[in-house]
Every structure is written in structure tokens, then in C-alpha cells.
Length: 477
Image 1 (cartoon, helix red, strand yellow):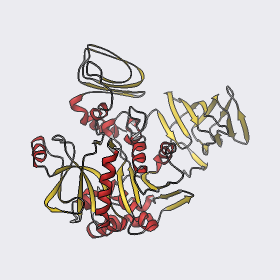
Image 2 (cartoon, helix red, strand yellow):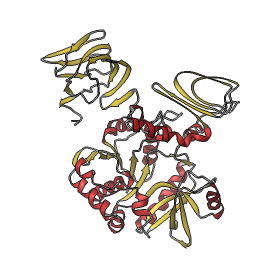
Image 3 (cartoon, one colour):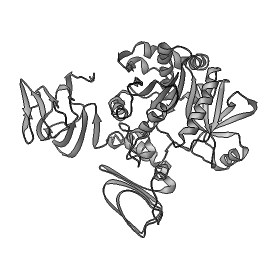
Image 4 (cartoon, helix red, strand yellow):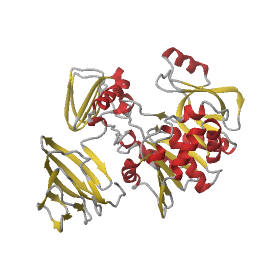
């Protein structure tokens, strides 16, 4: 059997302001409506011999992940999860997956590690490459997928293949090379034995763990400690390992390339041409969008006059471009990005400034996803905040209390079941209730359609951390 392991994390800072830490790149819908995470799942399910897909992600992203998976998962396919309390880079994520995989399926379980933020258009070539990688993995190799370069790309790391050593289904890796300058990248392209490092891997759980024990024992032992201290929940076709925060905090923050691949002599590569992209900038995203006669690529209601070669992403409001060229404009409800096409890799520096200043737009959108649905901040000012809340059918917020704010709920559509202090209420459209500060309360949607309501908060402090949970069906504290 083959066990795909989807690694879903990272902030995707070069795709800000659409990508945020709490809603990162794999969750962004592409122009065709599917997200990169959904495409990765479907690519895994189409492979031969797959009856379980494991996903390693942040615990705060579990329910958003399940929402995206739900339309595509089949009853025959088991879904398992390893949930991280915070990021510790790819070595920790892959080690935790391997430890769990070995425990459940044994040493010989073949793992296919798939980052959730890559786009592969040639599924047939991908399946062929995976079949070759499975042969090498069974022979005890750590297998990488080397993308045949099409240009002297300076934004990727490279794999140098050993021309003198040919394996049964690929090439031995001589070394890994950091992102080069343009002249060096041109030399790699002409040499013919250098490949883009895709970040995809294939190996048995036993091989990966044995190699970590030899080359990165500190990573392995500390991840093992975190897994041993973790909570496991499982049911029919479902299993979830919730990594222990206290012990996981001790795990080194290091990539699998630095921790293992660059140190091991048992690394092979399968050269392949997959029509692959890591969608690493807005320029790459633009390439997925149809082009007009003036070279503009537009998402949303866009008007242009004398504008050439621009990319505009503005799905929520009318945007006009007049007499400008070679710009990238990305509009969201709470932030707008304007950059020249040649500078899209530098967007990450803006995100760094936002994080340093504590500005929450690096972390959250105005619409925030929760296990029970979403909330959107419509307006806020001194001592008040107005939200639009959507609760999914049969979903429920926690039984909670706030010290510093009161709340007024008005139902817009659907039906709400409300606990307000000692009272239990059923509210229909255009009905409301007031919840004073200090009152225990809960909101539930007992119906079969979405519940939409407006929440008006008022008080001295309106932060999301002013919450005391007493009961929660999603296990939050």
C-alpha cells in the first residue's frame, strides 16, 4: 500500500494579503475554484493502492481542512491527521508522520510526502514518477522528486544528480544546492544533471526513522517524546494524533533537507516533468488566469483603459486601472497590495513589518474560519464591534462567558437555539437577545440551513482572548 502524507502549513507570506497565517496558501481558491489543498488530496486519491491519506497540519486548521476535504473524500478512504500546536518546520512534521505510520502500518509502509501548496498539472507523469519512487523506497532509499528545469530559476533550491551512479529507477543524489544567482542557475540548466528541489519525498517509515536516528537523533527523540505524550482520537475511517504542546516545544525548528537529506548517503532522485509550480508569488498565480488583448490578467469586476500587462485580483469590488503597466494589484476587504511585477518576491518583507508591529492583518482576515462556521468583522471602533456570524447546520459555539463585553444577537436568517444565563431560547428571523457581561451563553444552529446573525459587542475590551469556555464540542480550551 501507498500512504500519501499531505504537509499543510506555512504562512505563504509572498501571497499576502490573501494568504494569512490563519488562512494560508493551501486554502486559497485558485481561479478554477479549487484550492491547492483540495488539488493535492485529489492527486493523492487518484494514485494506485491508496486507502488512507494522512495530513499533518496546525490544530487550528483542522476544521477548515475537513471542510475542504468533505466534498472529495470517499467512504473507502481513511483520513488520519497529525496536529501540531505550532510549526516546527518539515523535519518535525515528517518525523511525527513516520512515527505514527510505523506504529499503525509497520516499518515497510511506503510514505509519499506531498506539500499542500504545490500545483501539478500532469497527473499521468506524476503517477509514473511515484511508481518509480516506490521501487527505490522499497530498496531503502530516501527518494526526492527532481523537477527538470525549464529556465535558470533563482527562486528554487537544486538537486545535483550523480551521473556516474544509476539506480534501478532513478539517480543517486550528489548534493543539494541553495538558491543560486542567475549565472549559476544558467550553468545548472546547461549541465543537465541539476533539478529543481520539489520538496516531495518517498520512503518507507522504517527507512526514514533509521536515517533520522543516524543523522538527526535529537529531532527524532524529541518528536517521539511529543508523540508518546499526545492524545489519540479515532473512529470509523478517522484517526487524529494531537501532539502535546509542552514536549513539542522542545523539538528543533529545522527543515528535513538540513536535518537529513543533505547529510544522508542514501538519497536518490526521480527526475520528472510534471508541469509543476509551487505558486510562490503573485506572478505565478497570475499565470493561472486568462489574459486579455492588452496582456492584463484580471479576477473580479475590472475596468481598464490604457493599461497593459497588469494582474488584478479584486473579487469583491469594482477596480479600475488607467494608464498603468506591469503592476500587481491584490485587493481584500482589509488590505490592498500594489507592487511592480518584478518585486513580487519582496511581499514577504511587508508581512515581516506587520508581524513586528503586531498588526493582525498578517494573521487574520476580516472573515475568520472557526469549527462551527465563520465570523466577519463589519465595523469596529472605541468600545464597540459589529460582526456577521454564520453557523453551519447542527453546529454549536462553546458554552462561554466574557468578562469585559456584552453582546446583542439579531437573527438575520435561519433559527438559533440560545442559552443566555439561566434561559434557553429559540430565536427566529428578526428576533434578538441581549447577553450581559459575565453571563454564560451558547449559540447553536439546530436547523438544516446556515444560521446568519449580527452580533453587536460593547464594552471596555473587545479582544478575542476575553473568553472563558466551560464546554466545547470541538475540544478547545
